[in-house]
Image (cartoon, rainbow, N blue to C red; front, side, top):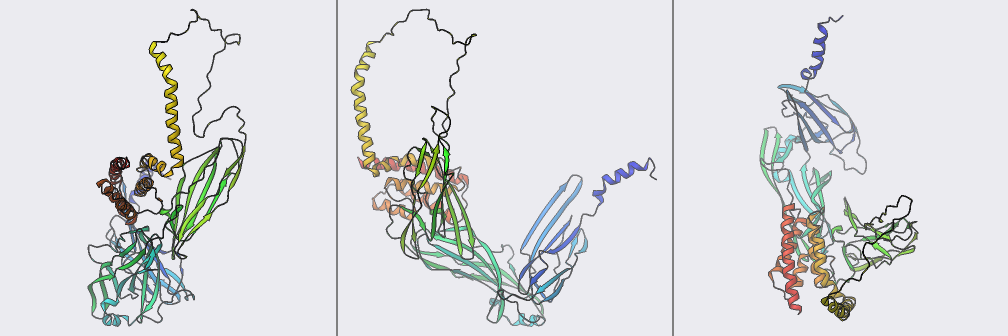
Length: 597
């Protein structure tokens, strides 16, 4: 029986119980307790407390456990009136060396000044499957003697590989970085003090997907009579210009710690993989309809829905799937579609990286709004790409589509998609439902016309005829001279593109395409696949030595560094290059107009 005085005390204790509750814990677990011999699996340690020490990793004869964690996360939780609580999560790579039931002993760690231990973990290790590389047979009891005889250079080394060393500009190259480490629990390799685990070289002159190499898989191999654990990082490169391009050396400063009968020793180790040279051949003479894509692709289109109503848009989705650089694919050129309004396309890229390189799906989505009832004909589309295996340009064509357009149900009201429809004027009826009669207090009289007005009316017909004739001549020139029309519209098209640069998901790519498009329009060249080297060649061929031309080339190179080399391309840098591009475009445009007179 609780007394009346004891009830508040119980409530007070319950309210403050979390403050006195135990806030330290240590747990160790694996994602799957069933593994195979030779399989790399992960052991996760999670600790919580106010003060956390370094964990002690147990030694297991049947397992190889990396002493250095491959991942480390730390979180701090602050609560008013209570000390901060730290939560650490560490991940260790491990490999089973023999089949059977194996117990991972408790990990130990000092938490809040007290040594804590985790619960043991029991593994069921199956024999290695035929497709998996097997771990070394036997036991490791005499491996400490091997640590005394092995050379330092054999403990770990780096390699750089590519799937081909001669390619066309824009052709994909699969780049692989490999790190070999001796599979021995008596030898540990870690980063030197003050350095990070790995840094990868920047490949200047290449467009890279992903921007930094990503870890793909880890496996075991036998080499020189020893067993190594090999970790791989991959990315796909696309050369942006012809010539000899170099993938720089890959270097890492490491420390090797080895356990032998003489005790623990530590020695520095400089790892280096030699640079690789890629020979890049220029593409053959490009056809006018070249899309800029280099690789193997499939091309198809789809219209949804197949039936619509007047002024209700349908969606034309054009998809390009393949191994080439998705960033170099220009939007398809739609033939004129009669009695319809076509929006600007929405552009999306979905890359998928696998062991054999990159594949990507590039989608261009158009909203097409029919303006009349009947049948809306969407013509077939063409996609021209260069196949490096066949060493020729390939043209793929979609089918044409016919969309049935039904009446919208609204009579005598036609408008373009997205246009604002002014409201119909409202006239208030009179009390009896009839519109009021408008009375005029003064008599009707003809407005007076001044002498100047009469002169303007007399001169208007000849002036109108003259303006109409000039307009007709100009319209005929635009129709008969596409080069002139394209050059004339280049400035306006560039300004429209530049306005979208800062809001783009990739400002470097948006600015790159805008400047490239302006140069291609001014000189009537294919825009797809053009690089800074191509732009420089164009200016040199036309003997344009103005500093504005050189500045535009430098802007393109800066965008290439931002796109290809994974360099930081902040909004401030994009704004600076954007302002510079606008200024250089105005200066170059003025120069070209003077030369054309």
